Amino acid sequence: MPLPRSSRAARTLGAVTPADFERLSELRRMQGIALALLLFMGAVFVVSFLLQDRYPLLGYVRAASEGGMVGALADWFAVTAIFRRPLGLPIPHTNLVSSKKDDIGEGLGSFIEQNFLADDVVHEKLSSISGARAAGEWLEQRPNAERLGGMVASAALGALTVLDDDDVRELIEVLVRRHVVDPEWGPLLGRAAESFIDGGHHEALIDIAADRFEDWLLAHPGAFDRVASSRLPSWVPGTVNRFVDDRLHAEAVRFARRVAEEPDHPFRLAVGRFLSDLARDLQQQERLQRQLESFKHDVFDSPRIRALAASTWATARAALVEMLEDPRGELRQRITGALQDFGRKLLEDPTLQFKIDVWVMEVAEHLVRSYRHDIASVVSETVQRWDAREAAEKIELQVGKDLQFIRINGTVVGSLAGLAIYTAATLLASALPAI
Image 1 (tube, rainbow, N blue to C red):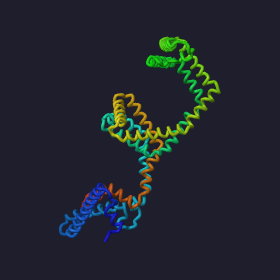
Image 2 (image 1 turned 30 degrees about the vertical axis):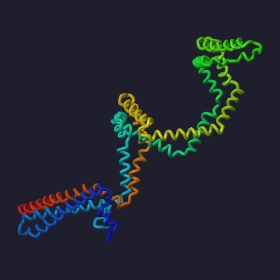
Image 3 (image 1 turned 180 degrees about the vertical axis):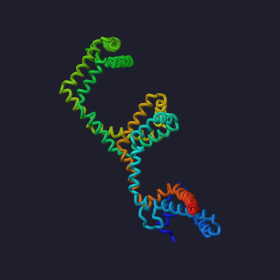
Image 4 (image 1 turned 45 degrees about the horizontal axis):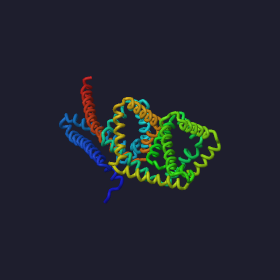
């Protein structure tokens, strides 16, 4: 026949893990020792009580055993009253854990908040820990860096898997439109071009264009065939036609070379003036600005551009997933290498260690100050959610073994107290007739 729930609970005290059952075994062993000591005192009391008239010295033994029984029973009652009603009797101020469960939880939460999460305690503990150096030593080891890199890659893969492509495209489109398309380009491009020209950076572009143009002309000598000779009268000899075309080609090569070699060439100056005027007009001429805005919206509102953006995201996503899934891929290796480099940097740079430790300490202290009460309330709320019987069982399972020593000590102390009282009374009684 299966045992009722209350009986099963009394036997197991809610033990569910191997560690719980080990604690339960130790508790039962100590309870057995305390009970055996009580029974021993009871047996000694019975024998000494029956024989004390024949053997007067057994009176001392009877008193010691009697005091031991009283102490054992009193402490059994005290220990039992903490967790349940002794013998099931509704005695006041017993079953304390069950009846005071919410108060105990509130007291534990308040104790943790005031003693473990106090500002000075948290600050002192965090000040003694160099988390940055420990992190550097850990990250410097390649297996650790690979493990953390794998976690980063897994998180990124999870994000890429969960994200909906349509939502991402919509988000990208919103961000691009807000930060790229909606702002006016004219003044911005004008200021950028003005700064570019003032810095003389356009000269390098002219050098590159002149060199490339010259190279192209030399590689294609027939590029000017019939460009000019086709406009000459038909009666002009072919030799003259070829001379004109060759001359035009040579002049073009010479022009490109002079532009590349002469910093003050008129063409360079003309290009500089043209770009300066364009930069000024982009900032000041409303008509040019309107033309640029119209061109911008025509480009970004084109279905082809949107399709290109969608396909670009799909391609980039597929490439990222493939690289993140490959543990030996270049991306994963670069992540691991970057983490190792960061770990070595932490070890070699005390200033960086100090800055990170201070930052972590400030963040932790801010979190503790802001959520100290919420953290402590987890304890009280958890205890309040427990069933009253379950709470008593959990606590008894944790501390019940040590409480059995109270019963054992009570038996010993009671025996000594009984012996002392009986001895004192006997001495006093023997001294009274003399008085």
